[in-house]
Image 1 (tube, rainbow, N blue to C red):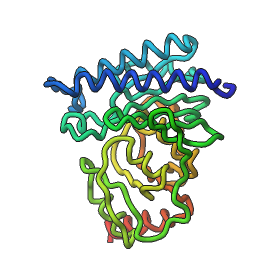
Image 2 (cartoon, helix red, strand yellow):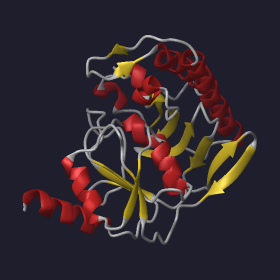
Image 3 (cartoon, rainbow, N blue to C red):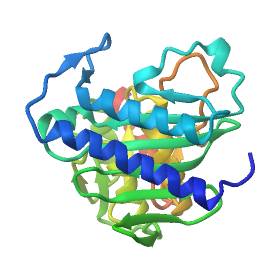
Length: 273
């Protein structure tokens, strides 16, 4: 895929904001909460944002398929042949939406040859939009003003670590203990990655299931700002390589030089010691 045009880049940001507006229309009133087969919550806001994004992207780039959390039934036999496609989470952080704490986002990524090459994360409540293209700078947009982003490197202690409120298992606790002098900060959705990208946080270890649409857009932003999203073996995250759409464990870093392998090893020793 050739580099995105400036017009296409801006058009996707508009779609993300329109999806955010559709979410807020639901958020500002009473709403029902259903549950999907995996017990995850589903609201009218998820579906409204899905429609806005899917229809908008199909108009913009009819040749590129859209894989959305709310339309993820496309079989592997079909999507395995996609060189370029949109990977979308219309409402990342539905649990945060239901809690009404404002910590939810719209995630739109463009994936080419299994790599996230363009990402937009929009926070409807604050109005902030983070965006980046592979090989270019990452930005946070407020109003019409773009601020370039850089991670905090070198990162010095105390490290500021994103620790999910909803997913704090024993392995996560062991890694946090191995990191030494830290300050833990609870934050929902892809906002964790965005705060690392802008230097407000340093790391986010995650053990347990996430889906590819949870990380793709934010990964592009984090990497463009100087950070990394790594599997425990050190490989960068890639997409649409398997039948499952579930990610493995990962650690997101603002400063890739941090001793993250030592943290994982110490946690492993602690758990099996």
